[in-house]
Amino acid sequence: MSLEEKREIALGKARIDHNRCIPWVGYVRLPELEKEWQDFNCGVCEEVCPVAYKGYSF
Image (tube, rainbow, N blue to C red):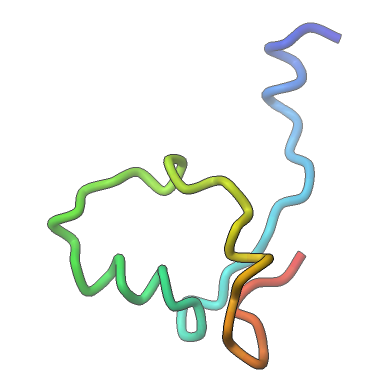
């Protein structure tokens, strides 16, 4: 499988509850940040999310 073919396959897509995800709410409140969400595709939120009912699901 070529690298291009691998990039087109969606593995482990997460769903974000925009009402519970703290970084998402912060981003919406500060649109002047103008950062692409792809820049934050690191998975740290899964490890350190402080919300009792997480703001994401797989």
